[in-house]
Every structure is written in structure tokens, then in C-alpha cells.
Amino acid sequence: MSAVAARLADGRLHLQHGPIDLIIEAFGARLEVERAYAQVIERFGDILPTLVGELPLLRRPLGDAYPLLQGPVARRMAEATWPHRAVYITPMAAVAGAVADEMLQAMVRGCTLDKAYVNDGGDIAIHLTPDHELRAGIFAQALDGVARLTAERPVRGIATSGRGGRSFSLGIADSATVLAATAAAADAAATLIANAVNVDHPAVERRPARDLDPDSDLGDLPVTVAVGDLPLEIIAEALDRGAAEARRLRHCGLIDSAALSLQGAWRLEADEAPLALMEVG
Image 1 (spheres, rainbow, N blue to C red):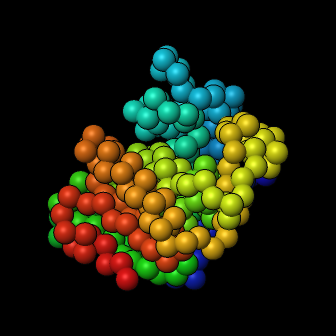
Image 2: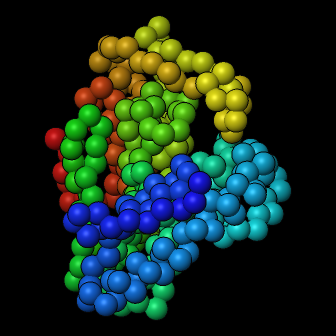
């Protein structure tokens, strides 16, 4: 299947190739926007084939040796996941964010744009110039909050993970949304934070990842397949664990902030007053 590019009715650009599905929007002078779109379309065709060529290594858990990867997206994945190598993680934990980062770089190169974003299934790479901002919705069951991003704040990536997402999760979070310097960094961190929102309880059902997908990079690790109604104290315990992981990553300088949700309850982790960043309610 070849890559497909189309313009949506509202002018946004849609790119799709196999499992990669991107929504892209740029803001600025019309000719600059069109040039940016042409550049990102040209770059897109090679993304999936190059990744597929390195899948065996990308699905391998990180160890003591830094993975020798060749493609630019694969290298972004390794860079984003390497700081977390003390736990079970593979470069695949950052694939969506890394694709978004690579495509954004291709789009803005040599173009004068006010702002732009590449949305890869909710993992978003962002370009901002002074006096411009973007607002990104935070979803669990509905639109539960908004992250307001400005050029002055060192956030150029957003990612969300959880048991309802496109990938398997070891935890029980409905969502873990992370803001970080890049989309790949946010993607890797969101995976770990969502995994940390976790408890053992009879209402939680798990199965080995390999039973659900023989090609899963999680192998025999038990992933969450269903979560029934949980007591409030169990919800709080699980969210506290996720918040502790988010706090650790924030103190290590790996993320800017995070919002975690489970069955209608939330936790926010941010250096500044959370409602200046996320209006959750």
C-alpha cells in the first residue's frame, strides 16, 4: 500500500500510510503554507519503509548498549526512550511521537510559518513562533481540559497513553497526557506514566501481550484488557502511583507536566499552577 495525501475540507493535510495516520496544519502566509505542505508530503513516503526495515531492533528492549539504528525516526525513538532504560522499554514506545517530530521538521525547514502541528493519533509535534499559541484538548471520556502552549514555554510535544489507546498498556489509566520538549519524549514518558497508574484488583483483567498480538514488543508481559468499576480508594492509589512517576520524570527534566485520569478522577503534575497549563474539570 502506497502513501496517500489528501486535503480535508477545512484545509488541513491528511497523510496516511499503513498504520501511520497524520493530521497536519500550518499557519502563515498562503505560499509558505503550501510550500511547507509540499515538503512534508515529499518526506512522508519514505517513513514507513525505513521503519519496517529496522523493526527487529526497534522491538528489542533497551539494555546496556545504545541501539545502533540508521533511520532518522528510529534514532529519535532511541533517543527518547534511552533515559528510561532501567525499566522494560523498547524504542517502539516513542514511535508515534518520533514520526510526528520528523514530519514537523520536514515541514518547517526553510519555511516561514507562524505555527504548525503534526498530529499522529494524538501524539503531537508543535512549531511555535513568538506571539503565537496553540491549544490542545485533553480527552479521557470527553473533552476534559485544555493545554495552552506558547512559544515561551519549552513544550513542543504532547502525547497521550493509556489502556484505551492504540497500544497495549501495563497500567489501568484511562489517559496519561504528557507535555515535553519533543513529541517523542512525551510519547515515551506517557507510556511509562500510564503503566505506573496501576493496582492489583479483581476488577482488573490482564493477558500476556503476545496472546493478543504475536508481534507485540511487550512479549509475555501482562497487559490490561479490561477494568471494572473500582472503589474510590483504589482509584486514588493507582493515580498516586502514576503521579509519583510523573513527578520523578519532571524532576529529572524529562517532561514539563502531566495530567492523569482514571474513572473520572484526575491528577495533575506541573511546576506552575496547573490551571495555567490545563483547565481540567
